[in-house]
Length: 316
Image 1 (cartoon, rainbow, N blue to C red):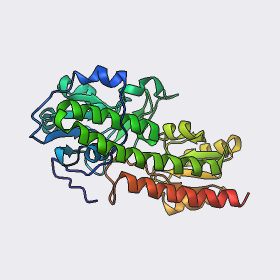
Image 2 (cartoon, rainbow, N blue to C red):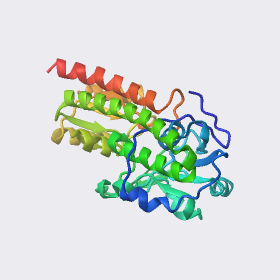
Image 3 (cartoon, helix red, strand yellow):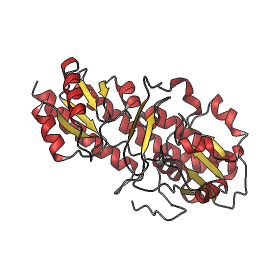
Image 4 (cartoon, rainbow, N blue to C red):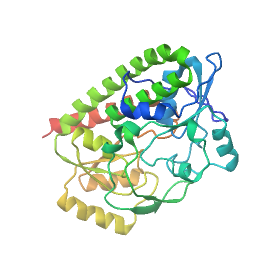
Protein backbone atom coordinates (compact mmCIF):
# COMPACT_ATOMS: atom_id res chain seq x y z
CA UNK A 1 0.00 0.00 0.00
CA UNK A 2 1.35 3.42 -0.92
CA UNK A 3 0.86 6.16 1.68
CA UNK A 4 0.97 9.80 0.66
CA UNK A 5 2.82 12.11 3.01
CA UNK A 6 1.25 15.32 1.77
CA UNK A 7 -1.27 16.77 4.20
CA UNK A 8 -3.91 15.51 4.53
CA UNK A 9 -2.35 12.09 4.40
CA UNK A 10 -4.76 9.45 3.08
CA UNK A 11 -4.21 5.98 4.43
CA UNK A 12 -5.82 2.62 3.94
CA UNK A 13 -6.38 0.98 7.36
CA UNK A 14 -7.66 -2.26 9.06
CA UNK A 15 -10.87 -2.86 11.10
CA UNK A 16 -11.60 -5.01 14.22
CA UNK A 17 -14.80 -6.29 15.91
CA UNK A 18 -18.23 -5.31 17.07
CA UNK A 19 -19.20 -4.76 20.61
CA UNK A 20 -20.06 -2.09 23.11
CA UNK A 21 -19.09 -1.00 26.53
CA UNK A 22 -19.58 1.56 29.23
CA UNK A 23 -16.39 3.42 28.37
CA UNK A 24 -17.58 3.91 24.79
CA UNK A 25 -21.01 5.07 25.96
CA UNK A 26 -19.38 7.65 28.24
CA UNK A 27 -17.42 8.96 25.29
CA UNK A 28 -20.23 8.95 22.71
CA UNK A 29 -21.76 12.28 23.71
CA UNK A 30 -18.48 13.99 22.82
CA UNK A 31 -18.65 13.05 19.15
CA UNK A 32 -20.38 15.59 16.94
CA UNK A 33 -22.86 14.25 14.40
CA UNK A 34 -22.82 15.41 10.79
CA UNK A 35 -24.59 14.83 7.51
CA UNK A 36 -24.45 11.23 6.33
CA UNK A 37 -23.82 12.54 2.83
CA UNK A 38 -20.46 14.11 3.68
CA UNK A 39 -17.15 12.29 4.11
CA UNK A 40 -16.00 12.19 7.72
CA UNK A 41 -12.65 13.95 8.20
CA UNK A 42 -10.51 12.08 10.75
CA UNK A 43 -7.05 12.92 12.06
CA UNK A 44 -5.02 10.43 14.11
CA UNK A 45 -1.89 10.50 16.28
CA UNK A 46 -0.21 7.29 15.07
CA UNK A 47 -0.20 4.89 12.16
CA UNK A 48 -2.00 1.93 13.82
CA UNK A 49 -4.99 4.20 14.42
CA UNK A 50 -4.82 5.41 10.82
CA UNK A 51 -4.78 1.83 9.59
CA UNK A 52 -7.75 0.80 11.72
CA UNK A 53 -9.72 3.96 10.97
CA UNK A 54 -9.47 3.60 7.20
CA UNK A 55 -10.30 -0.09 7.29
CA UNK A 56 -13.40 0.65 9.34
CA UNK A 57 -14.32 3.88 7.59
CA UNK A 58 -13.71 2.79 4.01
CA UNK A 59 -14.95 5.30 1.43
CA UNK A 60 -17.04 7.12 4.05
CA UNK A 61 -14.00 8.48 5.91
CA UNK A 62 -10.87 10.44 5.00
CA UNK A 63 -8.05 9.60 7.40
CA UNK A 64 -5.04 11.87 7.84
CA UNK A 65 -1.78 11.28 9.70
CA UNK A 66 0.69 14.15 9.13
CA UNK A 67 3.62 13.00 11.30
CA UNK A 68 6.93 12.85 9.36
CA UNK A 69 8.03 9.36 8.38
CA UNK A 70 11.39 9.70 10.15
CA UNK A 71 10.04 10.66 13.58
CA UNK A 72 8.47 8.71 16.42
CA UNK A 73 4.83 9.88 16.58
CA UNK A 74 4.82 9.33 20.34
CA UNK A 75 7.29 12.21 20.77
CA UNK A 76 6.65 14.25 17.62
CA UNK A 77 5.63 17.89 18.12
CA UNK A 78 3.50 19.29 15.27
CA UNK A 79 3.78 22.88 14.11
CA UNK A 80 1.04 25.38 15.04
CA UNK A 81 -0.19 25.13 11.45
CA UNK A 82 -0.54 21.35 11.76
CA UNK A 83 -2.33 21.68 15.10
CA UNK A 84 -4.77 24.04 13.37
CA UNK A 85 -5.47 21.36 10.76
CA UNK A 86 -6.18 18.84 13.54
CA UNK A 87 -8.59 21.37 15.06
CA UNK A 88 -10.53 21.49 11.80
CA UNK A 89 -11.12 17.72 11.62
CA UNK A 90 -14.49 16.12 12.38
CA UNK A 91 -12.84 13.63 14.75
CA UNK A 92 -9.38 13.29 16.32
CA UNK A 93 -8.44 9.74 17.31
CA UNK A 94 -6.13 9.42 20.32
CA UNK A 95 -4.25 6.29 21.29
CA UNK A 96 -4.62 6.80 25.02
CA UNK A 97 -1.92 5.77 27.52
CA UNK A 98 -0.42 9.29 27.31
CA UNK A 99 0.64 8.67 23.70
CA UNK A 100 1.47 11.80 21.63
CA UNK A 101 2.67 14.13 24.37
CA UNK A 102 1.80 17.22 22.32
CA UNK A 103 -1.94 16.62 22.70
CA UNK A 104 -1.86 17.65 26.37
CA UNK A 105 -0.33 21.01 25.41
CA UNK A 106 -2.56 21.76 22.40
CA UNK A 107 -5.97 23.39 22.36
CA UNK A 108 -8.03 20.69 20.66
CA UNK A 109 -11.86 20.70 20.67
CA UNK A 110 -12.91 18.21 23.34
CA UNK A 111 -16.05 17.29 21.42
CA UNK A 112 -13.88 15.95 18.59
CA UNK A 113 -11.49 13.86 20.71
CA UNK A 114 -11.91 10.08 20.79
CA UNK A 115 -9.71 8.24 23.28
CA UNK A 116 -9.57 4.79 21.72
CA UNK A 117 -7.98 3.34 24.86
CA UNK A 118 -10.66 4.49 27.28
CA UNK A 119 -12.11 0.99 27.73
CA UNK A 120 -8.88 -0.44 29.15
CA UNK A 121 -7.37 2.32 31.26
CA UNK A 122 -7.36 -0.13 34.17
CA UNK A 123 -5.08 -2.43 32.13
CA UNK A 124 -2.38 0.08 31.25
CA UNK A 125 1.14 -0.88 32.31
CA UNK A 126 2.99 1.59 34.56
CA UNK A 127 6.64 2.12 33.71
CA UNK A 128 8.90 1.06 36.51
CA UNK A 129 11.40 3.88 35.99
CA UNK A 130 11.85 7.05 33.97
CA UNK A 131 14.70 6.91 31.46
CA UNK A 132 15.72 9.87 29.29
CA UNK A 133 17.63 9.34 26.08
CA UNK A 134 17.86 10.70 22.55
CA UNK A 135 17.37 9.27 19.08
CA UNK A 136 16.06 10.42 15.73
CA UNK A 137 14.98 13.94 14.70
CA UNK A 138 12.72 14.29 17.75
CA UNK A 139 15.82 14.41 19.97
CA UNK A 140 15.90 13.68 23.68
CA UNK A 141 12.83 12.21 25.33
CA UNK A 142 11.84 10.27 28.43
CA UNK A 143 10.03 6.98 28.90
CA UNK A 144 7.86 7.78 31.91
CA UNK A 145 4.30 7.19 33.12
CA UNK A 146 2.65 4.24 31.36
CA UNK A 147 3.63 2.05 28.42
CA UNK A 148 1.86 3.26 25.29
CA UNK A 149 2.33 0.75 22.44
CA UNK A 150 -1.00 -0.78 23.36
CA UNK A 151 -1.77 -2.13 19.86
CA UNK A 152 0.95 -4.78 20.27
CA UNK A 153 -1.61 -6.68 22.32
CA UNK A 154 -4.22 -7.73 19.71
CA UNK A 155 -6.93 -7.81 22.38
CA UNK A 156 -6.32 -4.14 23.19
CA UNK A 157 -6.13 -3.28 19.50
CA UNK A 158 -9.58 -4.82 19.21
CA UNK A 159 -10.85 -2.48 21.94
CA UNK A 160 -9.39 0.47 20.03
CA UNK A 161 -11.11 -0.60 16.84
CA UNK A 162 -14.41 -0.94 18.65
CA UNK A 163 -14.04 2.60 20.00
CA UNK A 164 -13.34 3.88 16.49
CA UNK A 165 -16.39 2.09 15.13
CA UNK A 166 -18.61 3.53 17.85
CA UNK A 167 -17.32 7.06 17.23
CA UNK A 168 -17.84 6.78 13.48
CA UNK A 169 -21.34 5.42 13.98
CA UNK A 170 -22.18 8.28 16.33
CA UNK A 171 -20.94 10.84 13.81
CA UNK A 172 -22.53 9.14 10.77
CA UNK A 173 -25.50 7.04 11.99
CA UNK A 174 -26.56 6.17 8.48
CA UNK A 175 -23.26 4.38 7.87
CA UNK A 176 -23.09 2.58 11.24
CA UNK A 177 -23.98 -0.83 9.79
CA UNK A 178 -21.24 -0.52 7.14
CA UNK A 179 -18.71 0.46 9.81
CA UNK A 180 -19.64 -2.62 11.85
CA UNK A 181 -19.29 -4.89 8.82
CA UNK A 182 -15.79 -3.58 8.13
CA UNK A 183 -14.95 -3.94 11.80
CA UNK A 184 -15.78 -7.65 11.62
CA UNK A 185 -13.19 -8.03 8.86
CA UNK A 186 -10.54 -6.43 11.02
CA UNK A 187 -11.52 -8.59 13.96
CA UNK A 188 -10.74 -11.67 11.91
CA UNK A 189 -7.34 -10.25 10.96
CA UNK A 190 -6.45 -9.41 14.55
CA UNK A 191 -7.51 -12.84 15.75
CA UNK A 192 -5.24 -14.43 13.16
CA UNK A 193 -2.32 -12.28 14.31
CA UNK A 194 -3.07 -13.15 17.92
CA UNK A 195 -3.19 -16.87 17.18
CA UNK A 196 0.13 -16.78 15.34
CA UNK A 197 1.71 -14.78 18.17
CA UNK A 198 0.47 -17.28 20.72
CA UNK A 199 1.96 -20.17 18.77
CA UNK A 200 5.27 -18.39 18.14
CA UNK A 201 5.70 -17.31 21.76
CA UNK A 202 4.78 -20.77 23.01
CA UNK A 203 7.87 -22.00 21.17
CA UNK A 204 10.17 -19.72 23.17
CA UNK A 205 8.40 -20.64 26.41
CA UNK A 206 10.01 -18.96 29.45
CA UNK A 207 13.47 -18.54 27.94
CA UNK A 208 15.00 -15.11 28.67
CA UNK A 209 14.76 -12.40 26.02
CA UNK A 210 16.20 -8.91 25.73
CA UNK A 211 14.33 -6.10 24.00
CA UNK A 212 16.31 -3.29 22.42
CA UNK A 213 13.82 -0.67 23.59
CA UNK A 214 11.11 -0.49 26.28
CA UNK A 215 8.15 -0.58 23.88
CA UNK A 216 7.11 -4.23 24.00
CA UNK A 217 5.41 -4.33 27.41
CA UNK A 218 1.94 -5.23 26.15
CA UNK A 219 3.32 -7.95 23.92
CA UNK A 220 5.28 -9.33 26.89
CA UNK A 221 2.28 -9.33 29.20
CA UNK A 222 -0.17 -10.84 26.73
CA UNK A 223 2.09 -13.77 25.88
CA UNK A 224 3.97 -14.18 29.16
CA UNK A 225 7.41 -13.39 27.73
CA UNK A 226 10.40 -13.37 30.05
CA UNK A 227 11.94 -10.14 28.80
CA UNK A 228 14.21 -7.35 29.95
CA UNK A 229 14.64 -4.06 28.08
CA UNK A 230 17.64 -1.90 27.31
CA UNK A 231 17.72 1.46 25.48
CA UNK A 232 19.62 0.73 22.27
CA UNK A 233 18.94 2.20 18.84
CA UNK A 234 19.29 -0.01 15.73
CA UNK A 235 21.39 2.57 13.87
CA UNK A 236 23.73 3.43 16.75
CA UNK A 237 26.77 1.65 18.14
CA UNK A 238 26.33 1.17 21.90
CA UNK A 239 28.88 2.83 24.14
CA UNK A 240 31.49 0.92 26.11
CA UNK A 241 29.39 1.48 29.23
CA UNK A 242 26.27 0.11 27.52
CA UNK A 243 28.12 -3.01 26.42
CA UNK A 244 29.40 -3.50 29.96
CA UNK A 245 25.91 -3.16 31.39
CA UNK A 246 24.58 -5.57 28.78
CA UNK A 247 27.14 -8.22 29.66
CA UNK A 248 26.27 -7.82 33.32
CA UNK A 249 22.58 -8.19 32.43
CA UNK A 250 23.33 -11.48 30.68
CA UNK A 251 24.89 -12.85 33.85
CA UNK A 252 21.52 -12.70 35.63
CA UNK A 253 19.28 -12.93 32.56
CA UNK A 254 21.01 -15.28 30.08
CA UNK A 255 19.11 -14.35 26.94
CA UNK A 256 19.88 -15.98 23.61
CA UNK A 257 17.71 -13.61 21.58
CA UNK A 258 17.43 -9.82 21.33
CA UNK A 259 14.29 -8.29 19.80
CA UNK A 260 14.88 -5.11 17.79
CA UNK A 261 12.57 -2.42 16.40
CA UNK A 262 14.59 -2.45 13.17
CA UNK A 263 17.64 -4.21 11.76
CA UNK A 264 20.66 -3.42 13.97
CA UNK A 265 24.07 -2.43 12.68
CA UNK A 266 25.97 -5.43 11.35
CA UNK A 267 28.80 -4.75 13.79
CA UNK A 268 26.39 -4.75 16.72
CA UNK A 269 24.66 -7.95 15.60
CA UNK A 270 28.06 -9.63 15.18
CA UNK A 271 29.23 -8.62 18.64
CA UNK A 272 25.96 -9.85 20.13
CA UNK A 273 26.44 -13.19 18.42
CA UNK A 274 29.87 -13.35 19.99
CA UNK A 275 28.06 -13.13 23.33
CA UNK A 276 25.66 -15.90 22.29
CA UNK A 277 22.79 -13.52 21.55
CA UNK A 278 21.07 -13.59 18.16
CA UNK A 279 19.02 -10.69 16.77
CA UNK A 280 15.49 -10.70 15.39
CA UNK A 281 13.39 -7.72 14.25
CA UNK A 282 9.85 -7.08 15.51
CA UNK A 283 8.72 -3.70 14.16
CA UNK A 284 6.12 -2.05 16.44
CA UNK A 285 4.93 -0.02 13.42
CA UNK A 286 4.03 3.19 15.22
CA UNK A 287 4.68 5.18 12.05
CA UNK A 288 3.77 4.54 8.43
CA UNK A 289 5.81 1.63 7.05
CA UNK A 290 7.91 2.10 3.94
CA UNK A 291 6.10 -0.84 2.35
CA UNK A 292 2.80 -2.54 2.97
CA UNK A 293 0.52 -1.82 5.89
CA UNK A 294 0.17 -2.78 9.55
CA UNK A 295 -1.11 -6.28 8.78
CA UNK A 296 1.80 -6.99 6.44
CA UNK A 297 4.32 -5.63 8.93
CA UNK A 298 2.92 -7.92 11.62
CA UNK A 299 2.99 -10.86 9.20
CA UNK A 300 6.68 -10.15 8.53
CA UNK A 301 7.35 -9.85 12.25
CA UNK A 302 5.72 -13.21 12.81
CA UNK A 303 7.59 -14.82 9.94
CA UNK A 304 10.86 -13.77 11.56
CA UNK A 305 9.81 -14.92 15.04
CA UNK A 306 8.62 -18.28 13.77
CA UNK A 307 11.83 -18.83 11.84
CA UNK A 308 14.06 -17.70 14.70
CA UNK A 309 12.32 -19.38 17.59
CA UNK A 310 11.52 -22.50 15.65
CA UNK A 311 15.26 -22.94 15.08
CA UNK A 312 16.00 -22.13 18.70
CA UNK A 313 13.57 -24.68 20.11
CA UNK A 314 14.67 -27.27 17.57
CA UNK A 315 18.23 -27.05 18.80
CA UNK A 316 17.43 -27.42 22.49
